[in-house]
Amino acid sequence: MSSRIHDVIIVGSGLAGAAAAYQLSRKPRRILLIEAQARIGGRAYARRFRHDGTAELLEYGGSWITPWHERIRSLCRELGLALRPRTEIRERLAMRDGVPCPLAFADDDERLAHDRAVARIAADAMMLKAGLHENERGETLSGISYAEYMARLKPPLVTRHLQDAWWIVSGGGSMDEVSAGEFLHSCSYESGLAEDMIKVWAHTVEPSMDALAARLVAASGASVLLSSPVTRIVQDDAQVCVALASGEEHRSTHAVVATGINPMQAIAFTPPLTIGPATAVTRGQKGRAFKLWIKARGVPLGRLVTGDGTGVQMIFSERAADDGSMLLIGFGLHDEGARPADESWVRAELARLCPNAELLAHDWHDWLADPYARGTWLSTPYDLGAEFASGSWGPQGRIAFASSDIAAENAGWFEGAVCAGEAAAAWIASHPLRGSAATR
Image 1 (cartoon, one colour):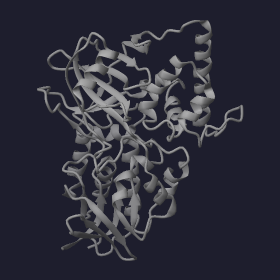
Image 2 (cartoon, rainbow, N blue to C red; image 1 turned 90 degrees about the vertical axis):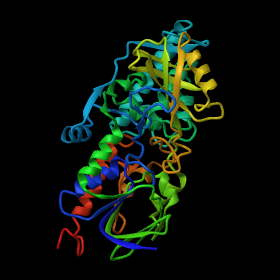
Image 3 (cartoon, rainbow, N blue to C red; image 1 turned 120 degrees about the vertical axis):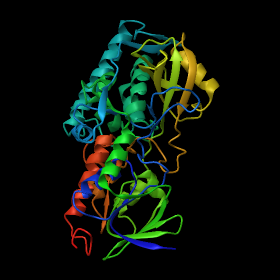
Image 4 (cartoon, rainbow, N blue to C red; image 1 turned 60 degrees about the vertical axis):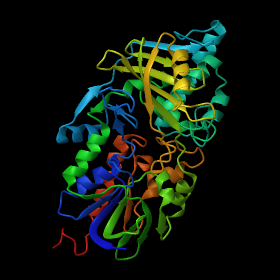
């Protein structure tokens, strides 16, 4: 067993950890960044199809940024990365009776019920955005699951299927477990209508989001340990000791834990985390959506199809490949019927949502099975709002916490990760580093 001394240790090389390292490097410090995986980026992860010659990098983690994600936009300018506009939606179809078609209603009564339901969602979304926790009827908007919220609305089935498709990319977890607030907050980004939330998915980073993380780390000059899972973090009045699965130990004056909530389940903290964060880690965030890339022919660019409550519930023809075929993104929830690794299942889903399409290839990353992710994007349990709030995750002793899971603003987005990392760095920078490179 060896023990090494640093000024700051950062655990996790996603956008939060990378941003923290970059900010801390503005003054001379011995920074060590420890990453469990063999790559930098965390939930930012881009690569090419594994079984196809497609040249394009594809984002298997998060990808889009909004017009107001100014920190990421600024860092891209600073580090020489470009932004690619999202393909415009050219055609919207919805599954009905097993067939994709323009959204249609059986009769005037169904259309009226649809209009009432989406108007209620839009009003509730804007009230929640304004900080209200009840609507004008006295109905709660927080502390309620998406399933409970939808049961209260009693929308027509065609309406429910449309909302469920957008739930996948906003709530991204079990409808019985995850807060309806995840869905309503996403609706409030634009008009209050669920189907308009895509309007704020403005750009992706080129060549990739994990390239931004890598450039931040490289520019920081931090020492980096990859493939080094952390098993224990012990702190006292003088220092922080970070123990690796290999038995190696590293010590520092301060540390930033930037792993996200679920990966912290594999780390023992001494002293233990305070009750709010400890509860959040034990329960975990519930993100269990999957993101599937499909290469196909026979689908027009810009076509968006929402599903019927099963399997792939949204598919978008996102851009053209070099060979003229289309690259489609599909979203769904991990459940008993979903088999995104199974080519025959993917082929059947593509045929259902895009009947004239020819499957050429497909690929995905299983974030649930990934031991260093243990879930996808943030999906807060409906009964644990306070435990996930940034106010519960202030520094504890010599350790600051940074993640999009607990960001003060833009939680769940990479922008939130960057801002959380910078906030952690600012807190550490406000404290003297005893005997550090910064003070010698």
